[in-house]
Image (cartoon, rainbow over all chains, first blue to last red; front, side):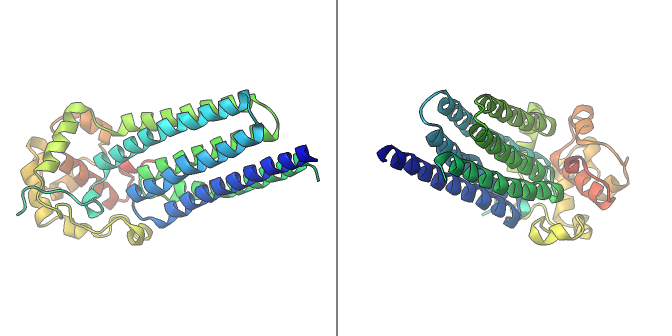
Length: 114
Length: 198
């Protein structure tokens, strides 16, 4: 009986975390639709990359229990956390070098103007 | 209802929601006005696919699918790096860009309409008439030398299709302003500029 209760407790924690992760991904998608410029959209995309994946992976780790599976999921999460900021950085560099109307959206620090 | 059934139901529902979100991001990557919007959308699709694979590995009790998710993470990272190495110029030209930006004319150096929400629906090269006069033209002349010192009007008559890649290899003296002018010109012609190739 007690063991059954613990199983359901683990399931409910998994469900809550998975739903939180889905909310994170959904808010990222909504943000990408609602923002007008790509550097704002990166902000919304970063939510899915960090918070959403964190919640989903943590939920599955709790659902899987201790073992090799959980370690693999942790590896996916850690790798994504390292690579996501780097790819965001490169994306903003692409925007900087190719957008002809960059300064319609981005303020420029201008030392020459009094 | 046992715990295993409940897990199966939960994971299936999550996969359905992920399918809807991936479809939404796919639409975004089609209508994204610039290359960076598309890369961002594809990157987010990659993240959601990784989540889907990870959920599937628990749903099907196949442990090796977590390895597949790890490889997928690496590949989606490498794809962004490859696209960045295509679109970001090499080091010498990059310093030139930085210098020009530092000596720029002021906040409104590049005039013209925004590329935000409202102009995304309209024609991409809407306010082009303003581009050919005033500050923009002056800054173009001042900041660029040699071949790229042509004004924007001449630029519009020039040879029609030079891509960004050819630019940075052929004439290293091409300035950023000329690149921007060329982008604008390509939009005016209704073609896809180098920065708009999907």
